[in-house]
Amino acid sequence: MTIEFEAPKPLVNMQNMLQTVAENMMRSTSREMDENEHSIPWDYIEFMHTAMRSMGGAGGLAPVEEKPKEGAEKRPPIGYQKLAVQIEMLAWGDVGYYLVTPGGGLGAAAVQAAGTPEQKAKFLARFNEEKPTFAAMCMTEPGAGSDTSAIRARAVLDEKTNEWVINGEKIFVTAGDKSFTEYEKLGKGFIVVWASIDPSAGRAGMRAFVVEAGTPGVKITKLEHKLGIRASDTASISLVDARVPFENLLGSPTVEKTTTGFKGAMATFDATRPLVAASGLGVARAALEFLKEKLKENGVEIRYGLPRQKLTSVEREVIDMEIMLKSAWLMVLKAVWMADNKKPNALESSMSKVKAGDVCTKITQKAVEILGPIGYSREFLLEKWFRDAKITDIYEGTGQINRLVVARQILGYSGSELR
Ligand SMILES: Cc1cc2nc3c(=O)[nH]c(=O)nc-3n(C[C@H](O)[C@H](O)[C@H](O)COP(=O)(O)OP(=O)(O)OC[C@H]3O[C@@H](n4cnc5c(N)ncnc54)[C@H](O)[C@@H]3O)c2cc1C
Image (cartoon, rainbow, N blue to C red):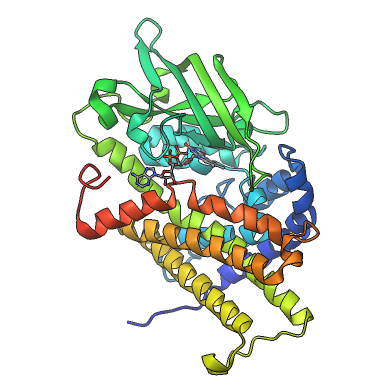
């Protein structure tokens, strides 16, 4: 069996196109977006929506398989691999901006994971319509982040009207504002809210509900001021007697005493963790390239061919950073390749996220350290990338939680045995 490391041509072409977007649209306004948190980059949103539609995308960053030309041999699936490359490149431009790329995001991932075929058809079609549209996922609550079983949001069926009545408090919802607030320039988005329909059943009673933008009883109560990714909105959302149609519960309303449904939904997020890892590695690459460029301007070229003991300490540090970056990227590639080929990848997915979280935090920090004032000054973007990097280690499972997932997978323990 041969191992092919060369990226397919369509992927390289797409990478080049995205690099142009990253350089011309993102980098030139990165600082402005960082300093004006909660402003909305409409030009970018509209440009990306139009570009993705014209390329036959699903109106968002979702795995898309190109149809083979007539008579051509069927190629192996590369949807998630392509997505990882796209995301890495956009995050190299600006990871906060990348998070404002229109599309279904985690909201659509939840519909994909837990929805019936009819629900998928109904709720996912809108991302490819004329206006850019967003969706978000609301899992985290005050007191329930890593431990999702502690969620207190409740959904009760009103049998008279056949509607679910949802009450709860959700925090740290990425793109929550653009998904729920009805902006003129955006299509009708939605948030997916996780709530219990039977608290006595624990995780087995948890369900996801599609809550349409503008639903009465739902309010954005706060937009977070953050350390990094400041172009991305992060919302707190309260739901007070919010009514949603019966059919907006994703999957089955029957509570069985097993967590298969919930686990199935969570397992599909195994596909998204390597993508978060890819975004962190885009930031790390930006920092490393900037470091090398500034060193070069100061007469320091990395002498790759020399034995290690003959290198200066800065050269050794840069080479070590390159090793970290490349090895983390290989882990991402393996995890997305497994997702493309429908192989269970919980282990590789969490490993890639843990590794990328560490690597992007270390590389950006080291780059600031080596460059000193140039790294610390707001004149350059390096200090921003240093702030942007940390989130890779927090959302979609913190570093500690993903380490637990890895340990469980390797040792064969269940969630309740190893917590
Ligand atoms: C910018 C941003 C965007 C986000 N976007 C979303 C979103 O779109 N949707 C959403 O639902 N959530 C989102 N989140 C929430 C995010 O997923 C949670 O913050 C994260 O899961 C951690 O949960 P927590 O904040 O409650 O921390 P906690 O669970 O309270 O954890 C605090 C610390 O304790 C550690 N810890 C917890 N349990 C264990 C354990 N068993 N063993 C070892 N260490 C442990 C954690 O690793 C962490 O270091 C976002 C968060 C941020 C900051």
